[in-house]
Length: 464
Image 1 (tube, rainbow, N blue to C red):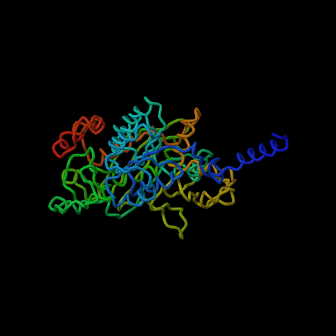
Image 2 (image 1 turned 120 degrees about the horizontal axis):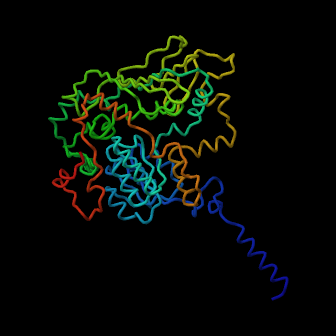
């Protein structure tokens, strides 16, 4: 071969290797195929759809949902993903092909689904509230720690800039020593308050929709007849399946003060309810509650009283709130000895100091627009990487790469949620001797071949 021919051939070959589609190298913000995670989703409709859209840059191996109609859009979005109704069959079929599992189901199935995935050594992202009881939280934490897994709870507001601005204000003493917090979620949404439907649910026996597997939807809960008062979404108002307004919104509203004030276990809890009989309504939630938590002094801060309001109960209006402003309906008023802070939901959104003190150089507008929230490109990139479900993908990928810092996160399975359970017991006025123990021991967590799930077996395996 002549020298000139050889050089021409080598140049063409080298150029050929240089021209590579951008997606292969991760250009234009895309994840290269070699870096994509293999994921499975337990739950594909409703809230699950939002989580899956955050992860559409990954390889979705399998989707599981008991309701074909609600899961339909995600089934179409990920046509190559295998489809299942039973998450146990999914894990048996693709357990060796996936890196992590996204759990976005009703509250009562979070623990069994997450535990089944972790027992197979899979990283888990689980929607909030993490579980249906504190005992389940402790069981999940133990399982995650034993296997050294990446775990994350879907509390989206904790990934925001605004919650960090709020914490900085508290830590810098912008309102002095905090003594009280009034937080809540004012709502009249029927899904949380089902007392008026109780007689109707007991008497009616409507047919199960053909697209819904009601038996699988109930999961480890005791068997009961189908009724549209349970699904979709309105299961939150039934204690067997959901955790009411408290379980649905405390994580969004109380999280900022829990973090900023380093709250731990309360020394006392007192609950007041509206139109509620613990004997007659034991499977339901009150139309309104006011729950007072007393937290002891800790570190440099003094004791803190936190009052929660929900349903028809509302947060009291601060005396020094501007006349043209409404008191926050979903959020909190934080009271210090030098001022107050009000904020909304999901990471202290629109937090502001009252009364207005612009002259002191402390911003009072929404936190995202304040001088404290630097909006440099680097800050925006970090904010995007912190977004809840996206953060899970980020951490799992770094773990696979051997990054020892990837396990640090804002919401792994270690948040102390015992105050929530104690509030639940206070609302229902249950003496300790009458509280049913939780045992995370169920055939739902065993290999599918060990039992058949028919109505007879279902009654026998129901967890207490």
